[in-house]
Image (cartoon, rainbow, N blue to C red; front, side):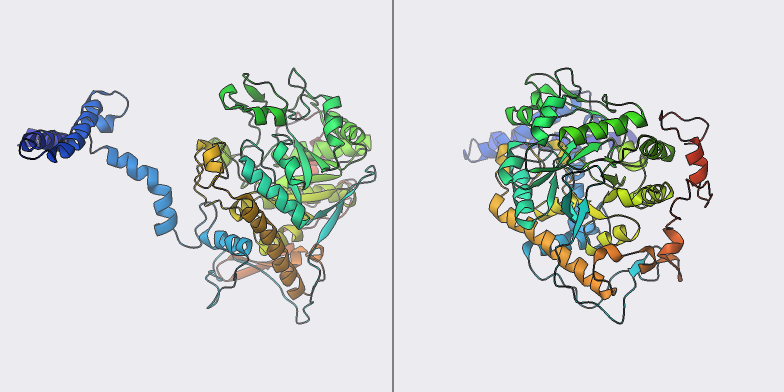
Length: 539
């Protein structure tokens, strides 16, 4: 009896074979039974393949029936998103946050009835302090001027812009909708490291040209930097700033390769690479290898672009290495016009799980460290700081500004505005809404004119919400937010003010050799402008 039970797992296979035979016999009475014979026969062939294949053990033990596992595994993300997760579960964006983006993008009611659903007495809850004398702000076109002392073409950027997403990762229609929306809404669109595509140019919006280790758009035949090609593209009026990508939050320190089979003529045109050859993006740059060389490269790009703002983006890793860069700024007298700090919670089309989960510093800690290091070196007033990493609501932006940022960027927020449903299929080329795919039939589903309207709406309504929070705090501009405007519940029922958590350390403290704690002076003393390599054991 025990041995007989061991064969029950083959009952589904045996059943479909038996039903196929039965239908064939009944077909002698009515030809309609041939349909059943065909269906059950096909399942029988599936079962025969299952017991003879060598890849999946579960199919060998449970022919036909074992496919149920793969079916449910395939729809698990959708089942969880629509039926199981709560409105506050972040997987990675909560339903509450996705909903507010959709509502603002569609320009429909975005208010919430019946009060907050946040657990206001739980550890980690944060809120802004408000004033009994709120300010009414009518002009919500908040701007920040980017351009240091050596910049001759400064840029007045919006305080909220589209973060880096390349053509190739996003579809042509997605890029066109985003960039056209940026033009109409008066904000900037970061190209991502994939270069300036024809769809960026067709949109006509302001561009932040991101240059990664592959030097796409300014790439020499050997894969290195081509100054002539750079100068040609940087001269385009649409290009407002140049951003050197050192790392990104979702996969810092990780290079990549686009196989030749995936390189379309449009991608080859944007990146300046040949067809039929694998396109490699190394993990590190070849144009510089030391902090001083990085500053010299920044100065070179600024000269070649005829004075446009030049900066870099990074996810903070070894904190000493960032201090090496700051020391190089002091030694050379060359400062970037801006630095964008990308948090490890930032998004990507595809990243190794270990990198996405456990490599790189989250935005809050990274931004606080960069802000205080520049204050300690006496450079904070010369360099603008941008922030990126899950900044999609007015509160997210206000918090980033309070702890040191001058402006905020968002990638996935604007993806949601053009229809992303968080299917998390970006790496499969099967995006169900045509945003993150190069499949032209799928991309066709994204209607550019209507999605352009939603990009404009999302930006405008988010800035309006930021203005309302700013005014409620008694401020007349979001740049006035400081850490003391934040309150944080550190543990259940206990609270601390933001300036107890997100310290603004004294100006020039590193130059004076003062030690405020937190490891700043120890790392500063070990940092070297001439090299990134450590002098001792700590990073």
